[in-house]
Amino acid sequence: MAAQWKGKSRGTVLGYKIFVLSMKKFGVGAAYFILYFVAAYFCFFSKDSVKAIYYYFRKRLNYSKFKSITSIYKSYYVFGQTIIDKVAISSGLSHKFTYEFDGIELIEKALKENKGGILISAHVGNFEIAEHFFGKLSNDMKISLLTTELEHSAIKEYLDTVTKKSNINFIYIKEDLSHIFEINAALTKNHLVCMTGDRYVEGSKYIEEELLGKKAKFPQGPFLLASRLKVPVLFVYVMKETNKHYHLFARQSNSKYKEENVLLKEYTESVQWMLNKYPTQWFNYFDFWQ
Image (cartoon, rainbow, N blue to C red; front, side, top):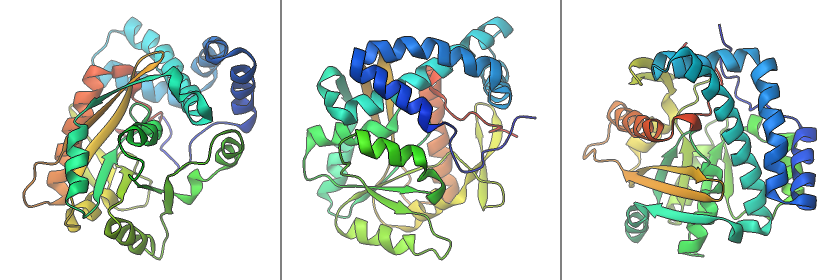
């Protein structure tokens, strides 16, 4: 059985240093070239994640065996590209990329209500560069990102040394629930509070919903929180379309009386729509459906 998610993403500082050095010396294209070999390495030596992503392609998307195997490589390669792009964009190379907006008026409308807003995304596409999309709309747009202490790793510390200082305010999830007060403070200032809704950690509270034809566990927190706060709730994704082009999608929750289960169903429907359109950009390399 493929491993469950442990709350921390995989990777090494050395791997990131190789990509950053290649990019600085020879450009983004050189980093993409190295990625051909890195993606192949993961295909052969990342047994658990390969098993998990093969299940996704073969059983959930109903691909043939051959297409499932080739899609595993494509998935690792695109995932690596999103990491390289994130570093490139935040290192001052944003002008090398083009950006397309779909539904951004919904975010602008939410901010005009002056109550802030909840943005729920997923590990689908490259949401971490959303800050650069929003910066093109308004310099006054403030983002607070809800994350775990586990993700505050040595990799992030290294990337902070080679990229421009982010305008994102990080809110770390605490056992004493003090992060709830930080979220409320951010919303009071009309900030957008961003979180992901697709990674459940074993032992934490969860709710279940169907995704791609089979039920899976989702963390209760984001949907419970979004259902309790009387602010606009949107589902937002940033998808890679070509080597240098990204597309931001924003969809608003249509639930008049927000309930966590209703929000989750809307969310999974939006994620499924994204995956049908961009199947190789599902980046949950663990036993998601258990």
